[in-house]
Image (cartoon, rainbow, N blue to C red; front, side, top):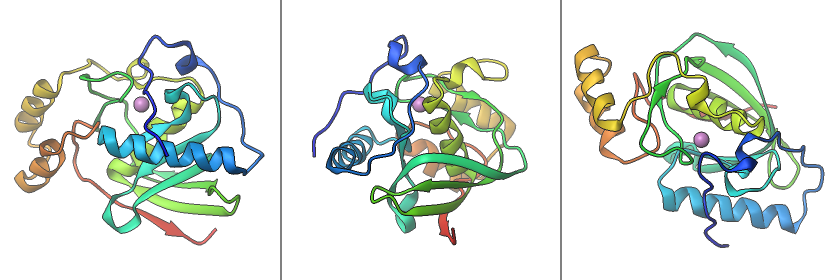
Length: 195
Ligand code: NI
């Protein structure tokens, strides 16, 4: 496994539609391994293959302690419920955060690295991450979908204090760790469900 460079906004690969994966081979396994190492190193929540210049429908999500870092191949989002305000950010557009308006919860259906069907129910931060990373596979960057302004992390912290969006404990958890997301109402969960 190896760390790979995360391409930044303006790189042409980030604006292209990624292709379906149909070979679950050692090359794919290598890519998944590298993505997992790279997301851990960057302390991110999600990463999509186009961010590494690879136009394949592969994303990884650090789904928290319980679930760990998972790969989702050819992901499809279904069963969206609710709407949440969340100041999300992107490893390809560091330093800026904005509210896109994502579902509060959703189901993501995909394949794992071995080609087995998997499904997860995701809420809060993890629902945001599933949407954000799926958008990358379609060449869409979050800042073009933001409702209202883009903010710096400092501004997001101020806004959240003003809006009293989160209780102190949750705020400390979300903003204390320098993850890619600016924080929101709740961290949520991502759990495997029956296919
Ligand atoms: Ni991103």
